[in-house]
Amino acid sequence: MVKQTSFLSEITLLEQLPVRERPAERLYQVGAQALNLTELLAAVIGGSHQLELAQTLVTRWGDTLLQVEQAELARVPGVGRQTAARIKAALELGQRLAHWPDEERRQIRRPEDAADLLFPLIGYQEQEHFVVLYLNTQNRVVDHEVLYKGSLNSSLVRTAEVFRGAIRRNCAAIIVAHNHPSGEPNPSPEDVALTRRLIEAGKLMEVEVLDHVVIGQGRFVSLRERRMGFD
Image: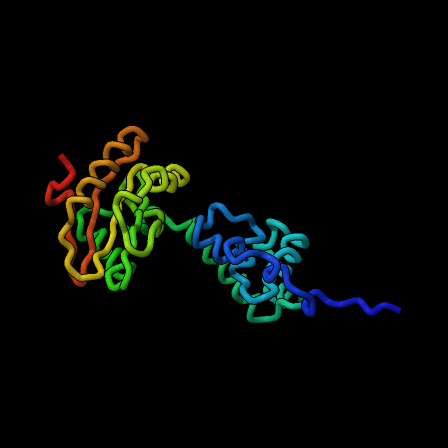
């Protein structure tokens, strides 16, 4: 009699994939919107058997996973209590954010409001980060996205990438921002040129560029406030 081997003792699906095609790496490179349900769940689960477990759960429950009790998830072989808790926490977080009342979302009335959101996000990073804040018609922040990390060359910032997230989220406006790891937030001529380019593109796409904020260490500069690129 041939003994059946559990997937937990075999070479995992994750190990068979090139690094660039693994869920966490794809999430980093192309964003959550590009991942399917199994990949998103695998990224939450983590570990070497994340894809097998995610496939098992999606096959069993599909889009009704939200209604499954934590104890039932924990009974699935290979899941256990801690992984079940992570899955339920991620699902609940998504639900709460999706139904977050508009009046409780952060509203951007002035550059300082944007800077307050950006300082914790990129203010003390050792590398440059380029961020987009997505806003609704009341200038309330509905989401944000880090588009670029590393040594940032403004000429490499692709206009289509900057506005793609706004179009997907049906947003009326965006604020772009980046940090200067040196701590000095004065905009460069390239920053101003990028701002002009994005403003012109935004007019064509009917998405307003409200500001370009440069974050330093404890200080910031609003290009709109200084009328740099905002003619």
